[in-house]
Image (tube, rainbow, N blue to C red; front, side, top):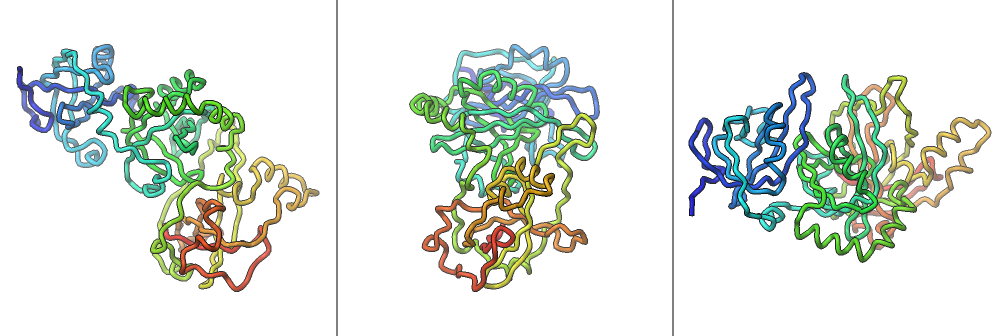
Length: 418
């Protein structure tokens, strides 16, 4: 039996070597932002589970289009091996390969499905909050049950295309997967064409954001697999078949578009801080750009925004609630709020129902406290489910405020350190 080198044994500049590797992930060809050059990333994995990212450029993409197929195994010789520039090492690793006309590739009849699936560390929907607004890259698996129309947005001096896919897990929980640019043109198109069959989507190297509560988003080095031959995918398909009636009912009602509560877990007691402590914490300086294109062909989307006073037994602060969390808090869609603001004869009580003041656990994102604008320095990104807000389920160090306020102008809440 022939001996082949493992991926870590191949050093930069080395030649005359052969590696047996499976194509574990494959991105669609992408055009560079500031040049006509096209590139394509693939990930190769040897029989020991070692991985490396390989890149193809322009003519090589076409030359190997029907050769380097996803989950197929190959003998690969003499790819160009170089050290990755320091700036890109966090995403691409220390070593990168380039596959070109001098690279020899021969397919072999071997499968590594068990090894492939074992390399994924899928994060459950309920644990995504641990990685929210961090640099962590995570993997998830879910059923694509709905897909929204794509839209064009302006970010800095560039335009990007984004499309949202709703994923569901075995607990009927949903999360939004935001796909950007090249993923819209390729993977989203495949999902759109098969959405009635509810394809299983495996997503790798995603970032978790606080957009609309908790959502996941693609990055430049993300990869999306649709119905791969993984054991986890087979199990999820069986669950899908057994629960298709319930799933179709959820999709018909589109409950995930206007959620009544946020499906996150109550934080541990040691993670909770009071308002007095929060006001002495360092601020987080962030720059925000408008998500909506300023050009004439842009389609504006209503977005709810509310200013609230948050109070506990140590003090109070002003915060804003924006987007879906605001709609959930006000129990009113942004479209109805827009109609109300344009009708001077409509009273807010006819649109926003009055509520009884009560305590909540609130997750907050800190802005720049030194800002000179009128924008509150804190933003409420989501509020816990009502079933977690009962007094007997709140941590022991949370006490009832001594005063209350009329909702919805003021509401008594508790704070959590982000």
